[in-house]
Image (cartoon, rainbow, N blue to C red):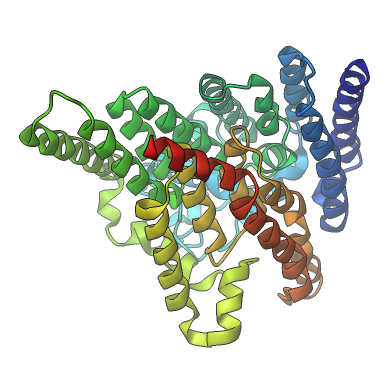
Amino acid sequence: MKKYKLLFYSLLLIILLLFAFSKYYNLLNKIEYKIAATLLLFTVYFCIILLLKKKIKINFIIILITGLIIRAFFFNDPSIKSQADVNRYIWDGRVQAQGINPYLYPPDSVKLESLQDNRIYPNINHKGYRTIYPPLAQMIFYISYIIGGDSFYTLKFIYLFFEGLTLLFLFLLVKEKKYILIYFLCPLIILESYLGMHIDIIGIAFILGAIYFFKKERFYLSIFMLVCSILIKYITLVTVPVFFIFYIKKISFKKKINKFQFYQNLFIKTLFFILLILLFYFPYIKAGKYIFESFIQYNQKWKFNGFIHQFFIYFTGNYARYLSVAFLSLIMFFIYFRLKAEFIIKIELTLLTALLFNNALYPWYLIWIIPFLVFHLRISIFYLIGIIYISLHVFIKYKATGVWDEKNIILFLQYIPFYILFIYDLLRGSYAEQFQNSSNNTRS
């Protein structure tokens, strides 16, 4: 076992040095280099994960320190100014600091002309669109701006705080504590949270909190966490029926509860859920329909790396969206009502299904799935998170010529092996084993 332990810590040192090398030589800000660098990072990362199956004792403090050092590489990164999404976060915070509803006007509006500086404003993408981000995300942008102004560092420290919550919830939820490093050392988590600076990292803490408090039957706290997650990114809306169905199962098995109490509990929790959402939206309510305008436009117009959506477009043209929604609904119905699986597995599957059916699948979208790999290793998902950066090839030509040209070969390289491995996971691999255990538990 000593040789495996030595190999593990050697790989830990290698991934640390690779991050340092990539940062020092600015490889992660040049797309052609970023693709190569991330493929190498993920290769080492997967080797580390393979060693986890060996019965070696791992010092969690060393893992924690390594993860923090890697994150520290990206705390002083001037190239972040070119990251469009975080500039929009700062912009939305700035608009709110002036007492203006961020949903009312797009950045290029004459109403906001006094805020259009030479630092943040030029680096915002889609200046003609109103903000897409939900209310809680807006509140975080506002708090960050009030504390640190245009500083990116304030947001990074906020991210680090919520990652601390994520680690806490994972520590409380997972049996094998060493598997937490799957999350904490994942290159996708680090790069998209501290280089790309995507706010999804905060939503992860909330969805894990919702799961933890639900399992502890502290339902009001669970609902609060779930609502917070939804209002960071709408993706977790798809998990609401899972929480609802499992809550019904939980209260149904309670001995001292009659029919009236059953429906009373259900009504009160549902009302609490709705009122919480309305409470978060209330400060922005004067924007009316504009709150959802950009979200609707995004889902109608944006297409990137969505294999299923592209598949339907190829075969059905204008009917692709309707077919995609129909198939998504059928699969979700099966997961919600027919699939015999544990609570956390259903949460994972609903999120994964929603992502795969989305018309756009950027690399940072997949960070929502990574915490679930701590509970159950999935060959298929590991493959997808490791290969997805090749999808960024399209930006090389786009930046040079302005032509958006997604290659089918890139889609096939990502998704054909993924779906083969995913089917294996479902029929013979980790999913199959867990479905069988759930079925046996139901019978007994």
